[in-house]
Image (cartoon, one colour):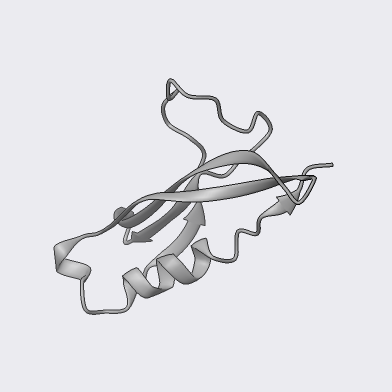
Length: 88
């Protein structure tokens, strides 16, 4: 079974990100190898007069050798546990 972990950003994009966000996606690892990934960018938006933080799914990849084994479903399930939150 692949293990899931949250990873921090590995590059600095040219657009503004939420400044205090530590997680930018979910990584699946199997026997020390990365076998899947769901990447995300956090952004703060005003909704109904409240400043809310959203994570926007930007990429989703599963190693071809791991496809059909539920790895992609587990990655997305872990990703969707990353909750949007009120900033103020």
